[in-house]
Image (spheres, rainbow, N blue to C red):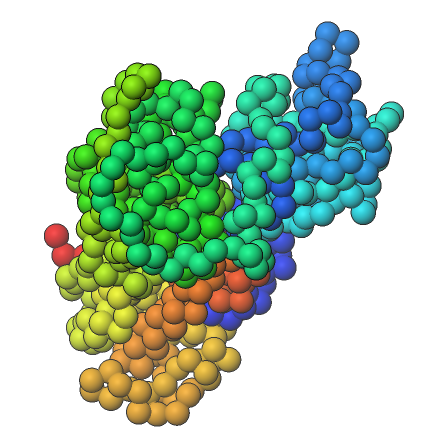
Length: 542
């Protein structure tokens, strides 16, 4: 099979694909619980789940509306403001365009995934020095992205704002941005400084001895407002405020929510996690989640969301779709939805806060330790029916090198790479053998192995066409790639499903994944991370 881009080579023809500017936001397909899907919050910031105004309230006036009678072809809204006025991302997402554009002077296009639906927001007429982001950047709602200008087809300083359903660069349809503006809140209202890793005054999030149980739970100034919260929500908020002194902010009711009515109905609270990117922040979130899970019946909890995991009161946790940034993926807060219990009465009693479970910082909701931020396939059994005899032993051994790679996945990769397990496969780019290694990559990643799959030769020894050497080299490279990505996944520098990131590193090179902060926007790599798992399915025993 002829291939234009070969794995683990740094993408020798990657420049051909730079015209592909749309970064597809891939939904996760693994069962990992350590997946930040988005970048680090920066500047501005809004409360969890909210949209941000693109310009601060009072700094702009609407000078032209969407498709007004006098401008039926106007695809957006014009917000007149002083030249140089700061602009902010309305929602978290990935910048797919940032620079010169016909008619716009300069523009910024950001792709978002909200409740499973794709959108783009478009910001136009900035000067060259008024664009503060670059294509490939991950941004959060309320993040500073540029300054208002008067560039291109513009008759006065203003922001031309567009909203597209389905994506601006992927055949979507424009819609009235006023709907988004009506829901948006003031940039900077999310108190990002309190959550910033650079805030040296932040409190420690290491376990703190809990006060003894007993007595009615008191109100807390950590709770932004108990107004319009139902009884169960107040009980959860007060208990967390009492049991976890390091928590500083607990949100609750808001008038609208694009995803569900949990917050507008007063049945949900968001426990914000200080310094959520740190080990201490993650442990604090785990302790809160485990504490609430331990007492889920007392609190009448229906479900929680923490670090992109949906955790129902009954049933198994499951990985959620990627919503584009740490807030929407619930990395900076623990979301708790309760049954409700009705609105509090004037003399409402909430009882004491339970004590057990507040010091359990384990990763899984059931309390079992799981410190590895890696996908776990349960290591499926191998269906050897279509696998050549000379490869079976090695694929089985290769599937035991690390928990991120099982034998069916390795078989699917080799099958796809060599167009049907062809030992002598050579691509037009010069990649060779079962795993399609470039000679330069084989010189560092390849090696001769013994009968147990252990490396016995120096780097570059053995052959990419030898069943044992090639299979074990592919397994090692996948595992090393996954290991090298763990820190970036945990910090939020890498966004995406760990399995997809690992496969993208094999196909495009780990450096390309690092450069783009996720699966690179190369056509072959985007397809590769989908096809290999599909091929793997036929090699998994029923």
